[in-house]
Image (cartoon, rainbow, N blue to C red; front, side, top):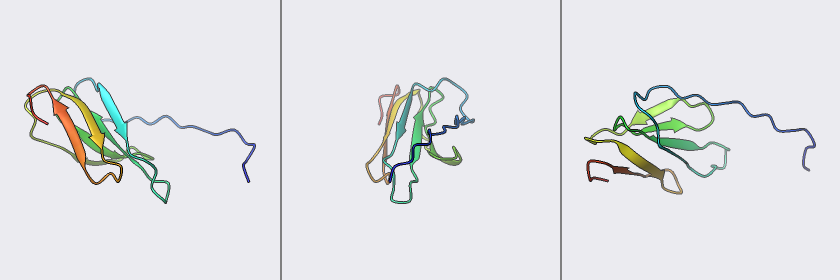
Length: 88
């Protein structure tokens, strides 16, 4: 049974990057309504976060240039990044 109450949305602010963020990618919803987000950033450090709270889970390190895109696999077990340092 669907509720007639309007949905409430809370803005999510995720701190930690030191340069602009050109891309965000969200995983699909899990059975418990949890999901993840990964942010690509010009600081070269893509970050994985809890999608509901914005809590930091981890940072992917190793790129020597800006990261332009980051994606999560459908099960959120794998991430792929694309960087200006010609690596993925």
